[in-house]
Length: 144
Image (cartoon, rainbow, N blue to C red; front, side):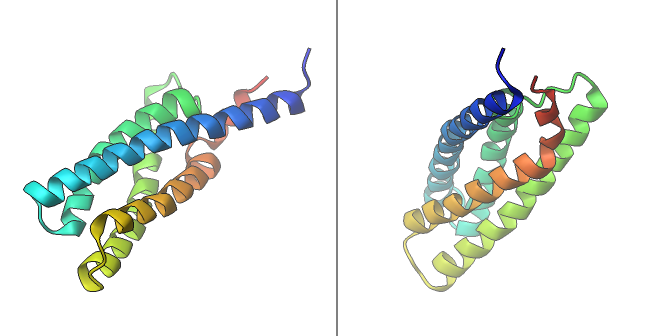
């Protein structure tokens, strides 16, 4: 039988790997939808970013809950509470991303793709920290 430390170490590594895989997919969804919106129907970068955020957050919630943090609660109220915290945290990081996009694209005039990619890097790191320490924290106690 493996010790709790071995399981936690292996689980922690797997969690990070899964977060990176689904984080990259979320990044692709966010960036591709941003580029679509900003170059077709929503020319203002911050507005296009907000629209792409909706798609990315829905994808991220379901993948993070099911595969990354094993956030299944079994109780509808807990699931709703978890989703609410997820949205709150993502709104906070959306604010950070919107400020970066507004500053570097709309005010300074840098090209949108590198700025969007860099902003997404900051957001992915912040989202992992918030998910691990706040949203799905209680679920780590299920490891045996």
